[in-house]
Length: 336
Image (cartoon, rainbow, N blue to C red; front, top):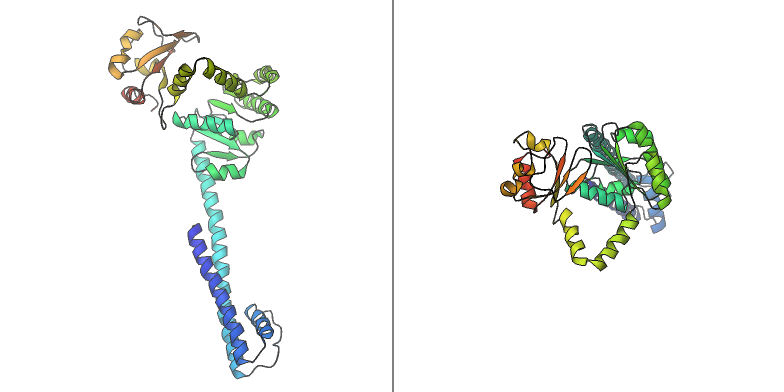
């Protein structure tokens, strides 16, 4: 649409310039006006302001003036229609786009709401996209939304406004990530979100150690300090660089591929009879290795034994190459 508008506007401007040049040279030759008089006469004629001519016109000059008026009216009308059509169509497209985004958000369930699309919010969104987890981003900066709206679902507005949280589907959401750079703003978000959805799992960013307990008291389930994690990570690269680099590659390897998967036991029991990890036999079936088990109470067992008993509400942590994880997901219809 932008390209079509620019081409049509270029045509309109070319026609307007052409009629101006024709008018100036016409009055210069037919009425023997000076250059200043010719320009003045052309301007008042094409704009139809109604001023009288510089000097009385003869028959030829009057016919030329009639031609100039009629032609300029059509050209200016064309230019106005081009601009008006562009504005109206642009507004219509924006309305249709907003309606389409609203319908997509309304259809979401158990999704993630990311508050703020700064550095941390963008990283969270990229990771969610890699894991194909549906999410909505709340952002108030229009320039940021316009630059990323083709790849991300946005709700424009202040995240501390309850109506904006409701528009993002907070009542049907499963997680909320408060990734704003200001701890006070994150605190207000956590308070509002907890009031609107008691079951929501809230993850908040914190910059100050003193803010951690406040955010937890306000209702945050997990509080992350990116600066602390970053410092620990850099120090670990000094102490054990190869191990940390290997760990970095476990989560995301290549484009939109994962090496780790968290799977609920119910995803398996619906299709096979499995009482233990040995019964699952994932290594032989998919090539994946179970490196962890989380029981229904929330206890973590690292590198569980093959005879580890599985409970329906438990989960297993699976490690494998991207193609092995994909085979696992396809075999047991995980995430479908």
